[in-house]
Image (tube, rainbow, N blue to C red):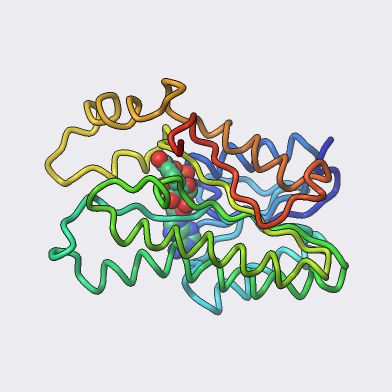
Length: 246
Ligand SMILES: NC(=O)c1ccc[n+]([C@@H]2O[C@H](COP(=O)([O-])OP(=O)(O)OC[C@H]3O[C@@H](n4cnc5c(N)ncnc54)[C@H](O)[C@@H]3O)[C@@H](O)[C@H]2O)c1
């Protein structure tokens, strides 16, 4: 039990990586507040509290943390998995609205959730934050301009917090997934491309280890970064990408 009785807020909990992460964290003995826009079908138990909320809204984020704290009595960790994709689009066709939406979900939500989580962690003298970015921030694909910028912001923000919060015993790290076998993958292709063909011809082929990243690969890396096994790891970016980032 590597996360025994620790309390985690996990965002994007209904998505491909999120669902697997919640499952793994429960298996490791954690309490989990599982947050997503819609939590229909997620059942509340004594260790699992599904919470619906929009992470781009200040008032929703404040409510999420107070509900989690009320249910479980503390917040040990925050795992930000929620995110949205961008379909490959030439820069001159990207609207300001699209840009702002992507930045808001993928970057601003990290600021809002961290701002709520940190006071609980400072009070305890320890805590852990892990943000999911993407290996595309160092190995970009054409047309993912706003998405890649948002993931670059996620990494820089995480490292800024890692140095700011080290003296309080709070660790902040990043996981950079490579192309992963979830519903999101198909959303990165240009509007007229065939999703299934692109998965094999473009995404899978771009991974040196020869397969797409599975949600369990990400969940396992998150267990490590949230456990005491990584007690001296902060400000790190862990590529879970089959070598895509090389
Ligand atoms: N799938 C990939 O190939 C890939 C690669 C690199 C990085 N990533 C990143 O991994 C993370 C997880 O992706 P996934 O593949 O599991 O995608 P997914 O689409 O299956 O899950 C994302 C979840 O985030 C939730 N979400 C979106 N906006 C939200 C908001 N405003 N408030 C609350 N929840 C919101 C969605 O409802 C969804 O359940 C994302 O940050 C993504 O950018 C994915």
